[in-house]
Length: 456
Image (cartoon, rainbow, N blue to C red; front, side, top):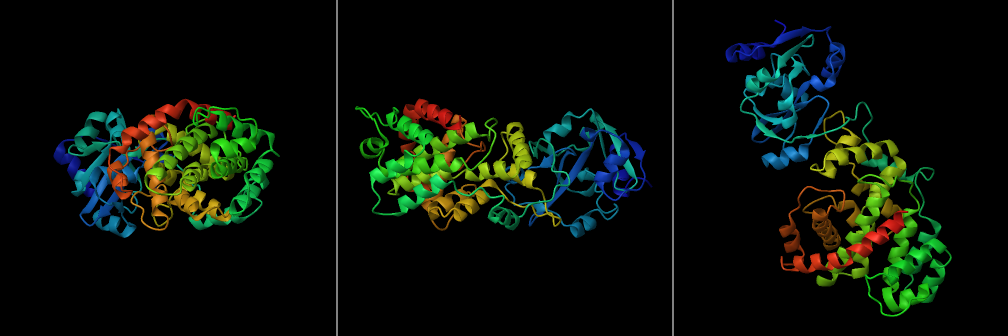
């Protein structure tokens, strides 16, 4: 029999019409798709998941990747991919690697991506290594009756055969000086100056004034409506002493000078234009939150300003991956960045998804550049909800700032956060939100103008 026995019995019992498509014997589903000569967008596949409550089948198109974060949020379960041995036990009548995407034939609960239901026809494995099945849209929907429908996938080009990157491999790449952009000399000098407790405003101003572009940006910042300084600001030293203060000037200058280490496109939701807008808004909100919870406001500002540097490093070191990530971000606004990065950086042979995200990459970079520990931790952990550990409050401030900016379309994440939990963890009540919103509204035009000037 060309079809797996249980699949054939299920079709017969349900009265489902289908057509067999014999193919040469192949080793896996990818090879079967190629051997068929049919378009990839006609194929449907099954991803098999399991937790302590049992197994489940997620059904989606072959040219998509399952968003495990979306599945977990939908089901409330910590589902993981089945091992090959578990799959063989469940699909004992099938050749290994050829489980049909018809969960009901095997007594499995099903989740189905909404795109599948829009197919006019579908092709999928028949459970054997030498045959496929074709059904029309009506027959497909009948076969998948009872499945729970939702948005389950990351839309876009898959990762193909690209080798997965582990965190150790990324760290190794960063430490090879011919690939790692060193901290720009000016940024390094600013960092060393801030470490000197006896450094003066004059020394900082003289350091900044060596760079005309940086000088212009600091002066623009000091003269902006963000601070409403009533008098004239005619020099960087006046910007330091009269308006901004030593720490704020040092941190802004450090951020501007550091970004020069990277070559990243300006366009796209992850490009340099969006990066600066996100960073400036996040830094402003982090500083406002720090004042309300007794954190160092200058350090909180720096955490917000530099927390997303990992994206710049991805763009600089891995331009192909960055381009793919940028496209996926555009196409999947409802997906988490964590899920998109899982897609871009691939899967290991063991089927464990490698969570090499821009947060971890940024944390590595900041550690190598010897930035303050709260900045390192905020970069490395800002993608991890419920974080507990070193410099926790700085991490939570960055997470809360990002959550509050999402409704404005600012940042690289658009999936919802647990704002009440973040407020509670920082000792805030919901009453602070209105005040923060008003503060951000007041400075938004100036922050937008500054972001535009910095990315130009």
